[in-house]
Length: 330
Image 1 (spheres, rainbow, N blue to C red):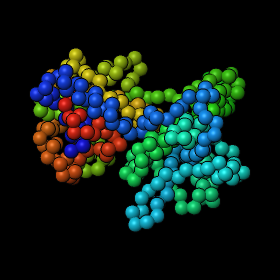
Image 2 (image 1 turned 120 degrees about the horizontal axis):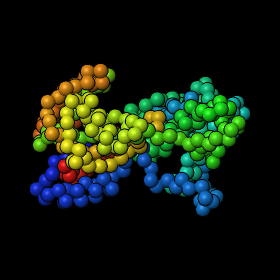
Image 3 (image 1 turned 45 degrees about the horizontal axis):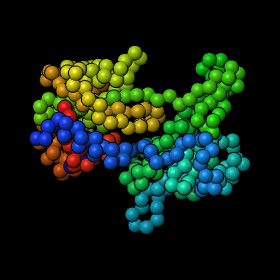
Image 4 (image 1 turned 90 degrees about the horizontal axis):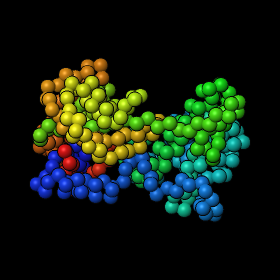
């Protein structure tokens, strides 16, 4: 049932205003994957000095480290380093280190291991993984958020080594929050790429599509990146039109919620909208299939946790998952 909460925005008998209130309450009470609002990111000196330090290792700027837990469950756990381990690795190679923030009495840092072979001598049994969304089922959601935050920041450092203006070497500044050029002194900070994801509704149906590489039966909302000179609403209209051929009522575009997607640097911004046409003209280069799905069909399939005929992305891709968030104002 949890997937229905994201995908079925139909106004209930209480009306639009009440529906909007229910959605806002449900989403505000629900954690967003890859977000950790409890973390204090301020560097103004107000944070306590005596805190535990933990370092999140990232390999090659984009790989997290995990290890298999003890016992029969064989759960996958994130690898965290202490200062002693980081000092040992420093003796082997120079490290890029960035401060993330304070959470639950712990000060978190990200550390980039420049060579995959380095961690083998320091961390017995660790394994590098490239897809956080695929390994989060055994992890606390705060841990997942910290891992993705560290990965996104280290990706920025690894891919911003030289100045785009003069070509000189860039070095870390502001405790890892940015990079400054040693030549022209230009300072840059991590860039965020906004992308929209949109639920298009037509009565009791919603529009879903799938890409060919996805698991069999996997369908999702239509999504795409915002281009230069566009508003988010412009992107909603263009992406829906390009990928499905469906026209939408521009006046019906409603913001739903957002989710950080640091793979490597996106922000997913969710909208709902009403369709004013129903004939599909699929972008064959972009999508393998686009179709209208009835809400009762989706309810039935998700009640059985999906199937090869129909299933939706994992919980990491869903913003609201509580039953009372089913009524969205469209």
